Image 1 (cartoon, helix red, strand yellow):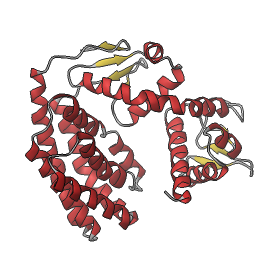
Image 2 (cartoon, one colour; image 1 turned 90 degrees about the vertical axis):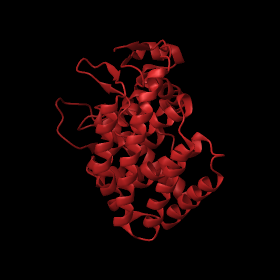
Image 3 (cartoon, one colour; image 1 turned 90 degrees about the horizontal axis):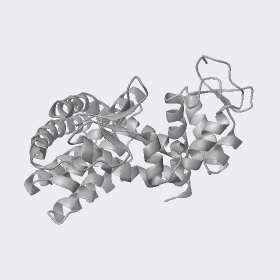
Image 4 (cartoon, one colour; image 1 turned 180 degrees about the vertical axis):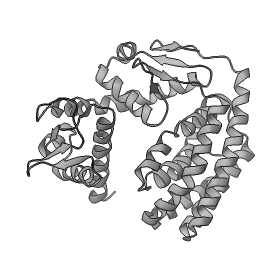
Length: 327
């Protein structure tokens, strides 16, 4: 990967984390951010730190502060020290490597459970179980909240709600309304090489089928729905709403990988539906691509609801020490 692309990716990652910290209150309006603080905290060079701050400023999350860095936009409920954000930034940045290690294990465990029951997540128990700090645990849970896997109740407790047929239908209805629109918006910034690469990948998977691993199917699914549709959608309200529906992609993956699998013909049909969307997108037929995507989501909903019915025959897995049954 060229150095410019790596720098851009690092800048996007830093900007994403700061946006999430602003959204959940870890960084409050009026807090000041300096370029030097950001590149030290996130272990990146000055260029990605500068790009991240400039991007956040242009998007309205930050405001230039007298030529000396930036402040978080908005009205603060209480006075705060000019540099009060630094401990928050540093704590999260230092936890980065740890939460990346813990996240996949927690995602798999919680997803296994919500196919059967509601569960509550206990921060302290999770920290003890993985031998990490509460900061790491909160970052893991914050990332999961962003994709709809967990939420907080009025008492501040972390909950993961059971995936029911009605919940699947509701989330798919949201995707059917928003995802085709997001694709049409994203098409304006599509990279021809990216589309060609994805088309080649899907063609190869179809050719190799059924000698295809679940992880390969999941990668192709995320490449279209997450990287291209959501990742390139410039309407942030639509993009954020769709991010919260990524629970469906996660659930679908674990149904495939851990429990009941998917009929060969169904997986092949879905791959061909993806190819139809991608080919139309590559040819610049944006309306056709959006309609093909909508049809794919309608059929995907029916398939996932049908597979969920089979879970009644599967024994409930034991709970991890940091989870409590809330059914």
